[in-house]
Amino acid sequence: MRNIIVAGNWKMNKDRDATQAFCSAIKEHYKSIEAGVEVIIAPAFPMLDLAKSALTPSSIKVSAQDVSFHDYGAYTSEVCAAMLSSLNISHCIVGHSERRQYHHETDARINLKLKKLLEAGLCPILCIGETLEEREAELTEKVVLNQLEACLMDISADEATGIVIAYEPVWAIGTGKTASSMQAQEVHAFIRNYLVNIFSSDTAANIHILYGGSMNENNMQELISMPDIDGGLIGGASLVEAKFFAMIDIAIQTAKTRR
Ligand code: PGA
Image (cartoon, rainbow, N blue to C red; front, side, top):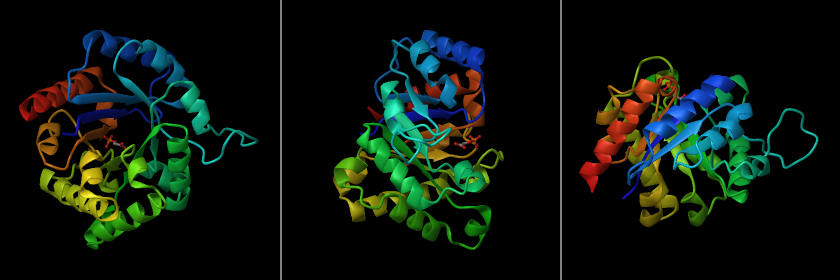
C-alpha cells in the first residue's frame, strides 16, 4: 500500500524567520507522523539547510524546488544535485510548470535533471500536466503521454520506484480551480497505466502519483480518496500553518481507514 504524501511547495515564499517559525511549529505539532503518511516541505534554496536543521529530529522531509542538470562547475547561480545531497535533502521538484513557462524548461532538460537527482540518491518529484488550451482541445492524454515519454527516457524500472510523479493541470495551479476528483482520477489512472506498460504492474503499483493544483483542506479528502491519487503537491495552502496542518490531519485519517 502506498503512503499518502503531503508535500508543500513554498515556491518563492517565506524568508529565514518565516521558515524557522513554520518548521519549528510543524515539528512541535507532529512529534511523530503516523504510519502511512509522509510529509515533505519544499522551501527556497537559501532556506534548505535551515529547514533541515529546524526539522531535525523529525520524520518531515525537505525538498528542493529545482536542480541543475550539470555537475559542479562554472555555472553561475546553479545548484547541483551533489550539493543538495550534502545537505541531506531527500527530494527535489523537477519540471514544475512555472519552470517550464518562465524558464523555457524542456522535457529533455527535465530528463537530465531527473537522472542527476537519481545518481545523487535524491527522489525527484516530476511535475507534468496540460494547459487549459490543451484540455479544451482534448489533448490532455497526448500531452501527458509526451511528457512522460520524454521525461522518463532511459529510466529503468528500479530507478522509477525512486520517483514521485505530480500531475498538475496548469489551469488549476494557483487559480482556485481544482480538477474534480473524477477528472484527476482519470488522468492518474492513465499515468499509472502508462507506468504498467513501460515498467511492470509491480513497479507501477509502487510509484506515487500526487495531484497538484489548488488543493486545499476542503477538497483534499475527496481527491485522495481516489484509487490512483496518492497525495498532493500543495502550493498556496501549504504556506498557511492551519491549512497545511489540517491537510496533514486529513491524510492521517485517510491512511487509518486504509489499514
Ligand atoms: P497551488 O500550487 O496549490 O497554489 O495551486 C500547486 C503547485 O504549483 O505545485
